[in-house]
Length: 193
Image (cartoon, rainbow, N blue to C red; front, top):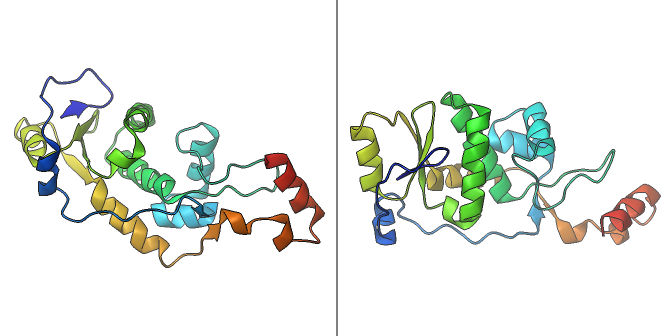
């Protein structure tokens, strides 16, 4: 287990096979071309549009499918973006500062987003710890530090369930051909290409 936003605590890494104790099912493959507009992302993550906008503008969680390209353009968030939004919201609810969350998200990005679904995040309200096995979670709790845990695989399933009931858009469908009379849309597409 490592503290994400401070010096590592020195605990050794555990074998990947131990992760089966925390996560029992394989997570599905994601279509990287499917996106969700801001209001849909907010609803699925349980955040306000104001939070979403601020976090996008400050680079905490930026949309990976399509960024805003000017006034009136729509950001499109991918599934993983919404997963990170929900994790950020949960960390905020534990009392972790936005500054510490930024450090944690940066660390997790450096690890690779695919690994995110295989960890449990623990927080003592001041720091965020990355646990990749049940033994690490137990060690943290027994040490009296961990007070809140986020099994990211479970959050994945929650987001998946929420989004299954909400509208999505495919990036390839957002073409000039689908809006032949919309000159402004055509300019936006040309500018973003």
